[in-house]
Length: 126
Image (cartoon, rainbow, N blue to C red; front, top):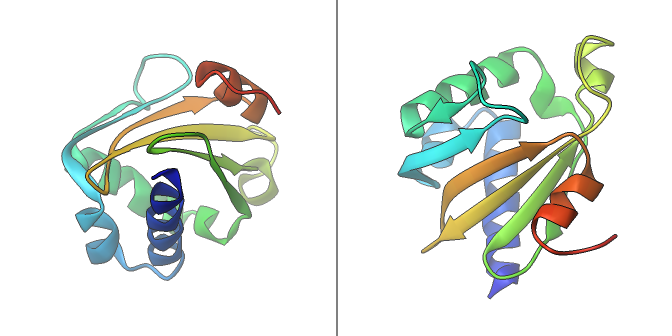
């Protein structure tokens, strides 16, 4: 049921906000993949790589930013953030990450420049 994925995502977001990286790590599949808008240096391959990036973003203050979670269907959640509000004008105004869950763990994350593009990628509309 997709609402379970939203609940797991909300639990992970709460863990990240309080710096509870142990809990957050347990919510990620060991082989989780996190792809940026375009392939490159921002891509993360595996739990350790994702956790390194999440720790960096936490230290940069991004965990304080507003993040909206949306149910996007079976085991899929979209997280929308506004990085420029924390990181300044060098960061995008909006980003959206499509998270796919399997057996209660995040197995993949794909970033998109906007929520509309993320919704289109999963076959939904605003």
